[in-house]
Length: 447
Image (cartoon, rainbow, N blue to C red; front, top):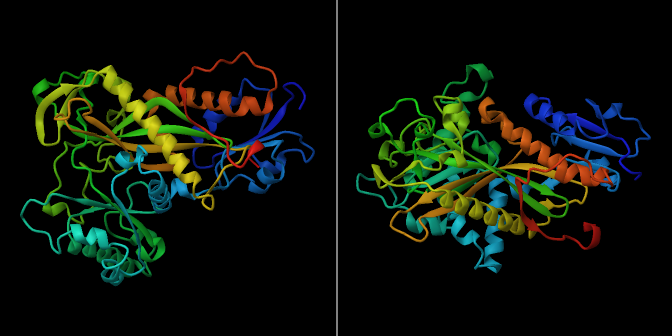
């Protein structure tokens, strides 16, 4: 390729205008011509960038022209973005690498493949045998030491997520999904009643069950923004971390170190009997789409939380300490280590994750930090929950949109420029992408 010759870029995010504008802005300093439709690119175009959604990209073009076409999505990456594939990959990896950091960062997980609710009886003596030894048959008023969370393998935005602590509770959940499916037959979408998070088990089939983490790190997001609230009114809220990572080629993995904390809009409380099977879990599910109060008040940068009071789940309203810069640095280190190991694990499942030297992809990674103040040398533990393709970055909100601009500029600098530009440009990287994994897959050139 001649020195910094013009290349052609197809940019298309039909349902994510913010993402599309960020991509266009990130490419503005390069010698590139933008197109809204792939078919508009000249047939004899030498160099092509496809920065688009998975469905909009031409995967045939990616495979046919590996030296001239760069794409913003891998063709096959189910072991990363499908919960049941992800946890099967991790399970297989840990069988061979029991000393991996994933042993402490992944909650105990079971895969449930079910079409009809009456199949659960057979699963208790087969795939869910180990879980059956832990769960009581029915829930009771006595203190239950363990709770579990059910998640559909291929759903997002909190759809189908439920808590349970007994075999009967899980059976009731699947029964409710099936009953909802029967009632919905013949109705138009607008006529369907319910809470909006029920799913159809016959269509999804794959679920994961995880041990529910009962000791999340709790912080009140209102503390760091002022507002005249008296300190005695601060209450610990659950939150999860949303980290963005970029997979590049075959294979480097970069963590964007400006990590978000996405909070519940209500005070945290331990799961109770009435929550079993319920969809009313706003204190426990921190998905931004599920919060009763949407908006930027529930979104913070992890860095902004330095100095915040820490609350223990076992003593809800008792301040135990304050979050320090050292704590934040430790958490980011743990996130980076977990990401590197997760991608290593998924590489051991080549049927469901295949790297390409001429591809890169942005993923949204959800993690939870647990907190045990009784452990002086290591009170925090980072747990990886899931990875998401085409993350809903608009939920970051206008206040923090600047970090998204920085993220996309960093992707352009790290992934796009080296592929098309043979001499360095003046655009400088801010260094907010941290390398988590650098390995070579499938020999020289990764082919």
